[in-house]
Image (tube, rainbow, N blue to C red; front, top):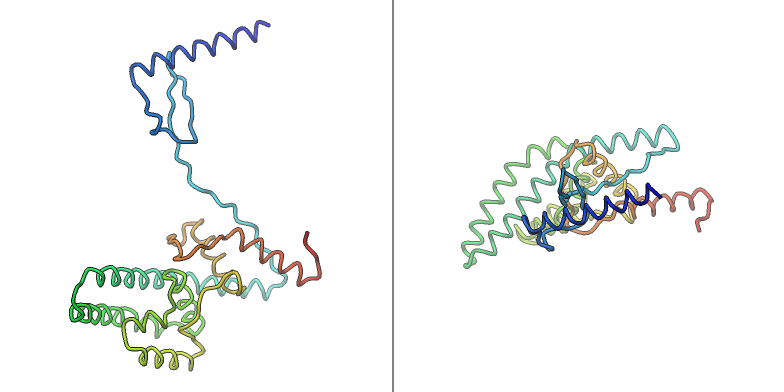
Length: 237
């Protein structure tokens, strides 16, 4: 009984203190959003807002064999290597499109496009030459992830369709398709690339950049785990 009475007294005092505090420092309703924390300081209660970052708990990695582990580690090394180039290139194309929208005449647009074209070729040609076939293909996929447009169409926007076709034909000689899209829900390697990116973002190894289209990583994990169980002869509810 004594404990209940003490609790009631405390709540009454708290309400009175909060009312006095509100008279001195009015709080706008629209300035407070969830979550909130109540901090008691002497004779007043302060309501403060706390911003919490979204936290994604990544599932533990499991591999059936050493070969699968080795394949994943190689893919991780290559993905981390080409990611900065994919982000840099996509940023340039985005700025290009924004600038072109501000220009009125076709002549100005052609002139500016050629300037950006020369810059991109000068910036990436040597780097691309040093990439392996696999790294080049991963770069193409990540370019699609960041822009929502295939590398073929990006080149087509800068040059004529014939030049884009020629580029794609040349790339095909090295087993690289400029028309390749990033499809983590359909292609397991793309899912593993997305997994590598998410883990690298979380660990601070790579700087996070959102994709041009929606990718739900947790849905991907659930889908591929379910797919693997079915392949191994298990059924899911």
